[in-house]
Image (cartoon, rainbow, N blue to C red):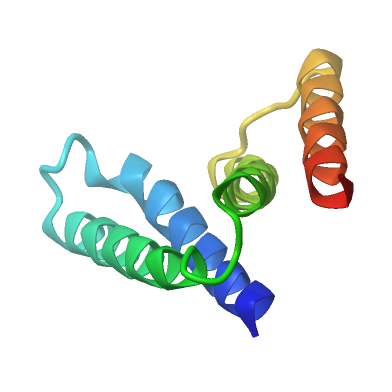
Length: 103
């Protein structure tokens, strides 16, 4: 259940971050509302996850999965490109997260 809630938190963080670009500096109302609501839900759920899971494990997982999903969202929705160096960086982030989760 804790990891399911962590995935919910990650999902709302990815949604909020993806919408952030559409806010145009918080000048577009609906994307701004969506961004703020997504971040609120994300942090609310994350705060409940942190009652049951260690901070380092939770944040490493939240950050790395969120980073990968935001990168994918940037490619799909904003047609951003990814370099080999970016892919190598993502692999290193995931490797570090796996190490934190295992040990």
